[in-house]
Length: 500
Image 1 (cartoon, rainbow, N blue to C red):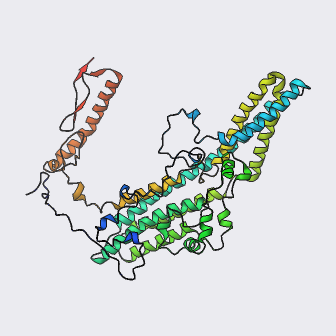
Image 2 (image 1 turned 45 degrees about the horizontal axis):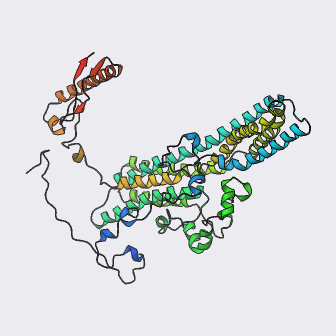
Image 3 (image 1 turned 90 degrees about the vertical axis):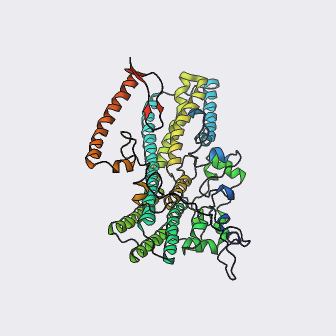
């Protein structure tokens, strides 16, 4: 007998027998953990690597560790976390740690000349330079900040484009690409899943390329490229010590120096590229070549037969290539060094001359006054320098791990359902096609005439207009409710309305 919605009645389905696999002689393509050799159900072994049941961390997320310096001074900042501290009291993301040494130097500089002025001889000068130099410094800092933030925003736009393009390309492969009959259908299914993984691989490979990490030994990408013939994988296998060496954590003093912004303690980010003894290739570009070849085979096999769908697939691959070249342009085209040097020199000259212009008026108060002024001026300068490269691992850099995790999650969501037929959702009893005007489902309206349906569509517009008027009158106090609106069993809102 049919169900209430007119569809076939649900039938009891027995639980399928557990499927087991055994190790075959010569099967060296799997690790022992990948093969169930004890006859246990296969689902115990193919659970998602990010599933809680396996207690395996997500390779795209930052590890939750005990509080240490890294939690405050390195990043990128985890956008999922929320701080209840007032914004002006928050340390994580602040530029203050890198300003400690400069401010101490300025305090000592100002204290020295203030003592000379107060105890030995008067060395104060006219404050006219405050106006002249202040304008130049303000102009330079404004230019520095605007260009740095422009690069930051442009980097974010490219990663937003990557997420959008990944969703489009994944949908083309999973929904529009058909699966053939028989065993070929199973091969097509696995091939489509592999293609979705390649999209995730592109995002992770781009992240590492932008951070000058050219190998494939990283947790979030090693399992995604093991089956691909790439220069980076060959270099990782041939020189594993060199590939892992740049991942080692720096020593205590070097770490503290980096936290405090000491230039002599900062490592060369391109060190891994310079020390390579084998060609490293361009991993994101090579991944795009695999995606292009996969698309060609879909077209040749007739799985992607509609020309518009073919164009959509190739256009999205081209869009991913645009993201690759665009982010590379942002990374390798910094502000001309002449501008950076000149702005830094002008700023420091202004700060070092500031005490002499304030000594006559402020005397001993000159010391805290100059330190406060230096904090403001140097803060703007240092922020511009930090966000100029938005792809690094500073606290204020873009959270590329979160973006890669979003791409991976999107691909899983797309692949979690078969291609949906209209009968499965359009003709559902829960499809309230004219809600909120009517709570009736699709089947009810199918038994009414076409004229009734079109008339109801017109009434829906009028009803929405009247509803908005009543809501506005309630908000303005012209109408009040004697009790709060409640949701009745039919899904509509009931309340007693009375005129004021």
